[in-house]
Image (cartoon, rainbow, N blue to C red; front, side, top):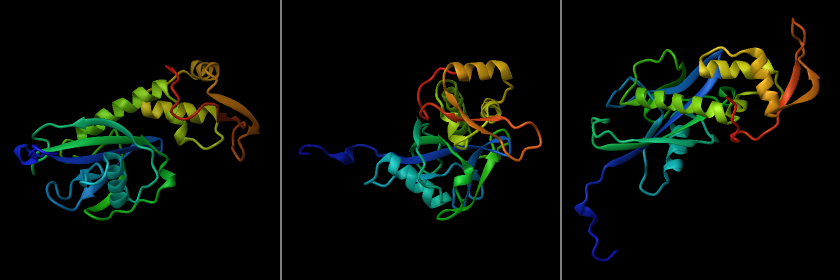
Length: 225
């Protein structure tokens, strides 16, 4: 543009960070990578990296996630932008964070590029994290719990057919609290979130429970609690 001199303005760097949550081994887990470069070499961190000049933030997030962890085809929701001037010791870096709740069984993790390891960690027993990633992960957990209260995101962790006990367990693990069985089932049925199928659990030692399927779209806004 005529008359515009971009060199007059400082240019902070832009990164993306991706927080993936899953429920595994009856625990809420978050995906972390072990850095293989400075700063914070050998420390665990959220997958992410610098945005290229010709790509969108979302494309950068998906690229970094694939390059560092081998995770692909995940629907990401933008979480928040973190811009503390001192959050990165290298230079002024602003990061756009994305997050998602996923089924860990769908992915085969593999560390590559500038990370040496990738693994799931309990959200309630995290290692020391690089940069301000502890703050980012904690904020992501808060947002995830909000979403559990007004969307059907929990269903993304369930098979096509499930029991109400399995559904309640997902809520209890993520919210980190016990829920009254009778009240929970009454609420779920009243909101028509599930529908019965004419099938029961198979190969279980106890009395087989009835199976259900979801009756509303994942992410649809429904006031559950």
